Image 1 (cartoon, rainbow, N blue to C red):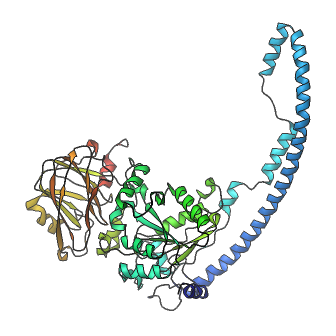
Image 2: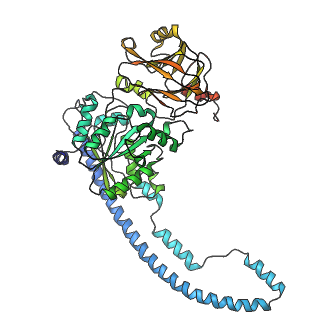
Image 3: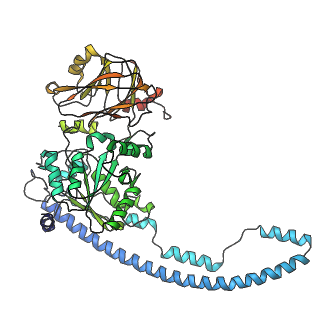
Length: 536
């Protein structure tokens, strides 16, 4: 089955953003691109390929000339060094004899002369100038023309305009089990799977079924925690790795757990080392990236491609390569497996469809604007509220947390900076929702009055007002760290099907006084951070 599908893919052109087969007939179906635009891109890329080829031949010729000249210069330097060493020994012996006869005045004069700046030999300067003339300047790499990726209209609307068109996508409406079966049906036995998770929504994006299917394929698993750059500045990557290892237990080997940022490149070198190791030990293995929707698979592979492009570190930090894979906050950007080449590792990694997870809040939203305001793309700035029993918190108009019993607690909210958190009393909670859903409480569902909430009761033990012991996690929305002395009881209200989890605190030390929100106030981090001094 795998070989047949690969053969069919070679016969038809695929979208380089989502992997779907391109077509020119029906704009309402996935993979549409106008025939004129398709031909224009092909013509443009063909011309660019000729320019790149000619440029490469010129650079290769310069490199060969430089290597040949350098070898000759090195040979001359070695000969002159040997000759100079003998002369230096003889000169030193004669110098020692003279120094014994010299007067003190002459020795002082010579020491003054010795402190004067020394100049390079003319031959050395010429060699450096010749090397600089033959070497390829760094700026020429940035000027190298880039091939334009061929993308369907849907990918362009998603990645460039943040718009959703009416294109029908079968994968978007498939269940998680159907997508998992589809992905693993194409995999070979003994492959290497990079399982992508979102550190910001670890419980919602960690899919245990992927591990079960990987075991059936006898595959090697690498767990990658992505989007670490979204966490507050106080995070330590080593502590996040340790926390993830504690969460997964012995499901995956500790050495195969990495925490990365697809935005800054932090932690990517560890992933590259692991890939190089498995390429050496498993030379015939295929490599795949598998994960939930919005876990950052495509952005991860875009960066991995740049970092394994056979260029020094300072070069890949520049925008030399266009991002081929479509990146968007909306689910379903990847429609079919896409091969991505890692040149320096001499391997190809396949990007796969995102696995939809019903337990995530984003799966219950249909408004793209609400999704954009829910999924964080900037660093999270936590909001800290003082909480007593019989008080409630609305997180946007999407979820609610009631404190049923317990002494004073500090509630630290980790959500998108645009998501509002509103504190109110028990008796006002329903009235606030009816009046303010979509206004004061944002983001919200398209029809808030039709949403059916279900309750989950949780017990939170705590012993320190400055350190949180547990997190209350709402999948796809964020989490709340609870700190303070004594245990407490909370009711968590979420739409039916959204997951709620209690876990050890991920960021336990964020309940700082300067981050606390004043009493009876609605807040989101975007507005509050704008009024705070930079030091906070």
